[in-house]
Image 1 (cartoon, rainbow, N blue to C red):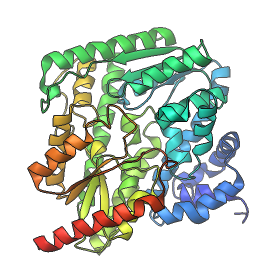
Image 2 (cartoon, helix red, strand yellow; image 1 turned 30 degrees about the vertical axis):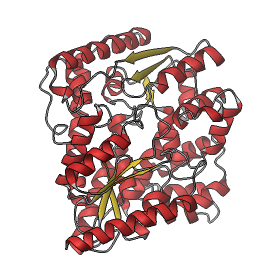
Image 3 (cartoon, rainbow, N blue to C red; image 1 turned 120 degrees about the horizontal axis):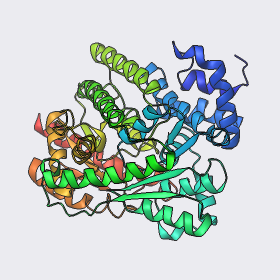
Image 4 (spheres, rainbow, N blue to C red; image 1 turned 90 degrees about the horizontal axis):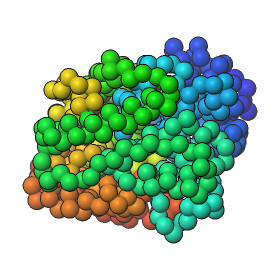
Length: 478
């Protein structure tokens, strides 16, 4: 390896393409990655910084599973940056946004492999910010071209707009936007179409948030069937635009693939409950991407990364090794701000593990097969089992279930104060969970996607204080 080829250094040392069997793809991936990096203005100096400073500071790249998790995201971005050429060749392009289930997007690829499905914003920010700390130029571009910074828009919507307007990704044949949880994304796509490009074709699927607190909506037959019809209508419109027939077998195949991966991921979650916890939580969170994001590379790289990370975790558990000393407190964040990995790292530096992201940690209900045979109703039920998608009371109940299952000492809420739906109920949930569990709950203002409004230095005192509190409580309980 040439000493100054930092693109190759990145792929080999940080992204798992020096590990078997991925090493056989290295030369091909290097060509794709250099092209992608050039378009994204990720320079050789950026790669040098990532390889020598940023990534080793925040991620334990001695572990194969960590490297392959980074590689999973890298491979998806390399694939995404080929979308312009694919569109020119006549292939179809479909976009989606968070939070959604991957099943329908995956089913489109099962129906016709020439259909390419991407979550351009979430995948992009997950690489360019998490591993290069460089999403700010895209956000600033969006803010300079109509998405005003003072409006406190979600960074995902700004990233999607910037990628489209800069011509880094093509206009899709259709953008299927789910407003089942977050209503900002549909409004953002309306803005993109009306303000910038009338050819931007979007289909919206939305429902009202009318569920009663603590109601298990996935057990409400009327709710499941209603949501199933909304999903059916959206999917049928997408298929009509793409010129394909609705293949219900493909939808069920995609759902089964998703549930299978989640069940395998549950093995890793159990290993993370060891004392000391073997793996940092932001890596485990990143590994869940194919379950709730359209991924054009599917589970190809995710399966290998999961297998490797489970082996890493087992080996560390057997040796009694962890990210913090044995007996240290263990917490979860409702959503770990993984794009700003200095946050979970600061907890670990202060002797507190943060292994779990509650929103993406499988609940007991999620591990069960669907009770509906209709593919749309089965997916609707699966969606309603999800902590991201349910009412505040059930979200709190699921948090309590997971805190008990994994023996978690505390939970951190927040980092979603910009989101008027997902961020609006965190203080209410925090109070309820603390009353029911008698375990401390903390709320931290901030943004899970970017760090321009807060810094590592600004958070340090807050995190150090939280760590002192949970360590004192754990010591008192012994």
